[in-house]
Image 1 (cartoon, helix red, strand yellow):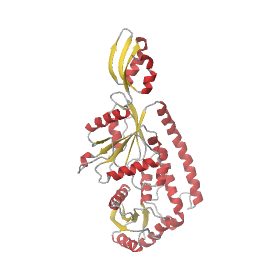
Image 2 (image 1 turned 180 degrees about the vertical axis):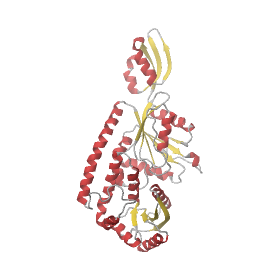
Image 3 (image 1 turned 60 degrees about the vertical axis):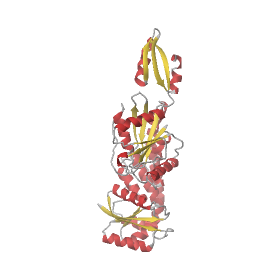
Image 4 (image 1 turned 90 degrees about the vertical axis):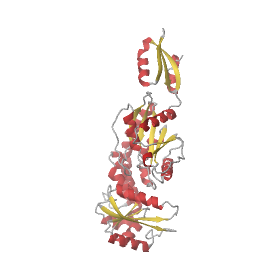
Amino acid sequence: MLKAVLVGADLVNDGMIDYYMKELENLAEASNIEVVYSMTQALNKITPNFYIGRGKVDEVKQFVINLEADMVIFNDELSGSQIRNIEEVVECRVIDRTLLILDIFASRAKTKEAMLQVEIAQLEYLRPRLAGMGASLNRQQGGIGSRGPGEKKLELDRRKIHEEIHKLKRELQNVVKSRQVQRKNRNRSNIKKIAIVGYTNAGKSTLLNTFVESTNSENPKEVFVKDMLFATLETATRHIQLPSNKEFVLTDTVGFVSNLPHNLVESFKSTLEEVTEADYLIHVVDASNHYHSKQIDVTNETLEEIGVHDIPTLYIYNKQDLIEEEVNPTYYPNLIVSLLDNREVSRILDTIEKEVFKGYSVVKLLIPFKEGELVSHLIENSHIINQEFSNEGTILELELSQILLSKYANYII
């Protein structure tokens, strides 16, 4: 296992540096790196040559030597020349937070689409740093930050990187087209679309799996769940049918993190289009995290960046079993739950049904006996409140959406 020294610069002095450094440590662990020391420096402004002060760089070198560290990871994004200058002093590999996140994404990407998205983001990161990082890249012998393109067919040339990015984007567009066709088919069916969003490791995939287990749902395949950052990158979609026969499509999306690389957000926009077209959002929050309000803000800001506006949202404050202090939610509507407790699921589903399907109306339909197939269809696909028979046919009291009200208007009594 690689060993790393973490370095952070406190420029804003907003009291959040400890949080950012702890998150950097979690990111390192998610990349299977052992953190042997973490240090910060309060700065009024960035030092052009080394980002932090030269004296601090010398101090970093001593920790690298004494703790036998293999690399130094900066919490802030560095330029190519800064990386080169620091490496010359500390005499080991230097990467920044952005490259670490890109490396995690590269190692977790499993689908063709995700792998293309990550490689595009890596190349976009590399392109402006070629001049400064030349020597550094030549020294790379694999390891963190070298997954994906590396020097493959690039020869450290901006023009070739530009051509490679253009080619990958065309390939990505072809992959995306098939998913867009699937989404258009769902849109034509008028089925409600719900997307799960939130900070990484808040419990989004757990929520999806719990819904699938607790309802009469098609495609019961579970998504991967693990207590670490960015355990899953792929968008997973499941069809959920409630006991009342109301149904919706539920999509689990990639989690967010503070200072998520802009190039990565841009590359994953095609995946996140599922969120922009949702009728409703479920925002899962790790309520046990002391900085969960900050995490909500980061998620909402990222959603704004990808074009999500004014979509009704239910906030699920998760991990109630780990909460030491009382949670005072600031976003509504909300529920405080533990997704590990199956009894909480019905409460969430009831809330979703009330919020998402509140446009439904209770009506009575008189359907002639000769149209028995329609009766069977409605019984199977609608919430039937009462059923009785008359001389003219079957009388169903049931809930219908506004679209179905128009479709069956001739049968209403």
